[in-house]
Image (cartoon, rainbow, N blue to C red; front, side):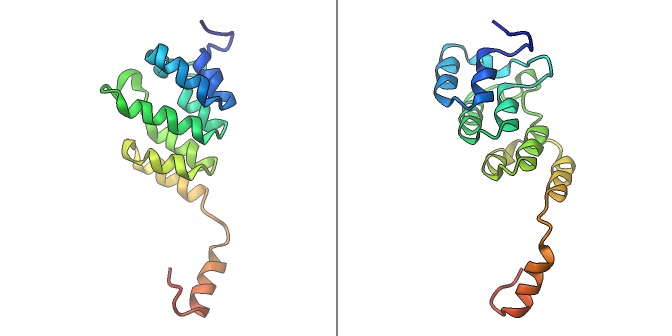
Length: 133
C-alpha cells in the first residue's frame, strides 16, 4: 500500500523515526527497503532528511546484510551521504563511507558544511604548542 505521496509504511516509519515499526516492516517484507516514493526517495533517504539517526543506522545496517546492494540503484549513497553531512548527522555519514560512488559530490558537501570558525582553531594551535592541526 502507498499513500498519495507514493510512500509505503516503511517510508512513514522512517519519516517519523519509528525504528521499532521499521524493524517489524522490514522483517515482514525486506523489499520495502528499495521502494521509492513519488520524489524517488527511499526510506533511508527519508530517515536521513528527517535526521532520525537511529532509524537511519538500522536501515543502513539492514541494507548491508542483503547480498544485492545495488538493487534498484538504492545506494548511490553519494547523495544519501551528502544528505547526512548537510543535516550534520556525522554518525550516519561515517557509517555510509564505504558505499560512496561519487567522491567529488561528497567533498563538495563537506566543504559547503565546513565549520566557519576555522580561523579560531588555527589561532589556538599557534598559541598552544601541543595543539597542532
